[in-house]
Length: 429
Ligand code: CMC
Image (cartoon, rainbow, N blue to C red; front, top):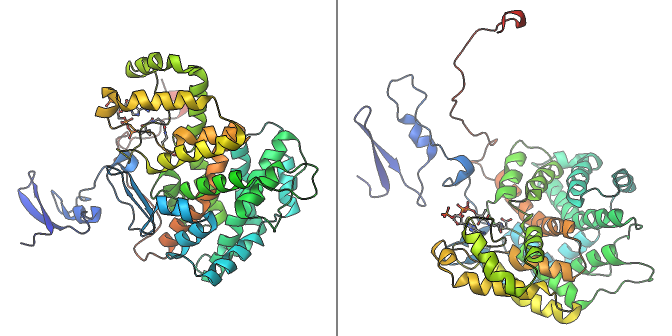
């Protein structure tokens, strides 16, 4: 008997099965041979919310939640945040390797030269109500792009895929900035090709009457770091949506719209907004002990704490905490920071949080920076969607090129009514 197997004994029949183990997993399809009688469907595994199911093999992002490790294509997030740029990281995620100087220049040129959107997309945006949520507008307009680029349907053509990847990474900031301008009733500001990726985004958001917008270099750098930190996070809810929608072979704009919709939910991309709300409600540092007491009594959660995968300090939160101090030197200190630091100090030495391994996650400090930079809270999730686009596309392309992948189609355990005959309405009691 090979050591790399799992022995299963079915106590209903006494039969014994040897299931191969590879990469610490067994294949769910290997369970199908386990039957009581020959015409049984066979055994399935039941795993609501994919708590313990690997849905793919991936080479993009690695997370060790117990140790608090995050790597893109093998590179530690700390090194990328300190030394790389978002555009370089996007290249890395999509190509698997860091670019040469020439490859980087060509990549940056291609992204920079795809930032404009068709004027009709602008007209579509004009149709939204003045207080439309920017995420609702982003989901709709990115889906609408598929009608402007029908060539995107050629998902099996590498050249076409590459073009859509350039377009999507380039146009997401433009769509995002236009949603913001729409909400303020300000004229849209067009992309400026002389600026960096984050610099141009700030230009499209905040340019007013000046002839040439000059981004503040500290804020431009901080935004770039935040983009790097949010670029990918392996099989989270929105990446899973991207893969699942994309597995039907729909065009990538429609699949990105699905992923963006998944990100919109408060359990996923919306938590940074909730942190700010919570800090505002606490109001001052001296109220922190009382708030912690209420959390421990089950009256609400400490938002920005805890994670399904990280059972240690989220490595992104550490970087963001340092970044916040740098940003506040420029913007002025966000007074809510003192409350956040006090919450963290008390929680990290409290048995309730220690026992449950609850640490600050990426959302604990990011909202404080966004707010200090001048963003309204409803823009926070949009700021997440822009950089995550490169991660979604990397996951999508990996899925398309994986010969083991097919249309995502889970099974169910049916517990509904057995077969019964239709009853005409006049005979229904
Ligand atoms: N405050 C207080 N208690 C908590 C918290 C929290 N933030 N998070 C978890 N717990 C407790 C929870 O009550 C449970 O206690 P008990 O064992 O006594 O019932 C235990 O810790 C395990 O919690 P869980 O809900 O089973 O854990 P989960 O892995 O299903 O949930 C989570 C993970 C992120 C949804 C959760 O920690 C949470 O709600 N955190 C606050 C919201 C938040 O910050 N979300 C951002 C996630 S990171 C960004 C992203 O994914 O987009």
